[in-house]
Image 1 (cartoon, rainbow, N blue to C red):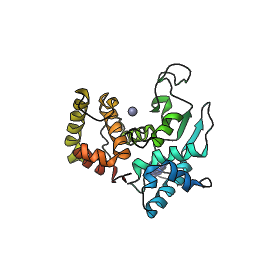
Image 2 (spheres, rainbow, N blue to C red; image 1 turned 30 degrees about the horizontal axis):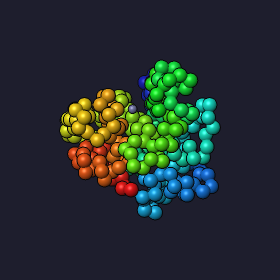
Image 3 (cartoon, rainbow, N blue to C red; image 1 turned 120 degrees about the vertical axis):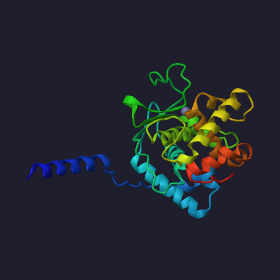
Image 4 (cartoon, protein in one colour; image 1 turned 30 degrees about the vertical axis):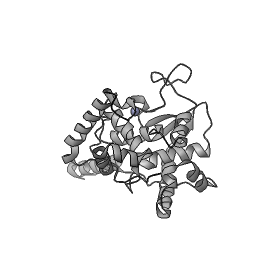
Length: 256
Ligand SMILES: [Zn+2]
């Protein structure tokens, strides 16, 4: 074979290796899953029947390609359904979305230390998206995961928060600007809204979680928790953020 054909052949092989995405398998959900989702996941409960069926399908897919491991804790069916719901809610507006930047989730019995990820000390971290050697991993605290779904009057949900960081990371950086989801013309308005939002929190004039003033990425994740947990209130108090977030997430979350 002429060298040029050999090169083309090798290049094609490399490209195939880099970009080939394995078809996603779906798993069977545990018995009674409809009741469990109805009881624990307000986003699902408030949806019409076709929406519920699509949600269930997305959960079956999610659990087909993401592995969940318990660290010093057992992983129950409810844990799996709540983790999958946290992942499905932010991407529910994207029929084809898969978290290709995530493979494993470690479920911890409580909050942890962000230096060595231990649960023994006084660590207060409830969730994180891994970097470096922890690439394609996420850690979630079980009590924080439950609190996010059981408390339907606050504006917080740790599971959703971490998956929004993953969406943000699609373009390579967790920086509060989800470039692959936001049309370029909205970049400047979006960054301005974040800057204003952070300034409002710092002045004590915001109803958003103060953790959002840490940086742009945390502001985006905290605002997204509010957007999905209390959409009507978020729309009333932060209409411009709400409008841009319906574009980013391609959806109008159902109100409770
Ligand atoms: Zn965060």
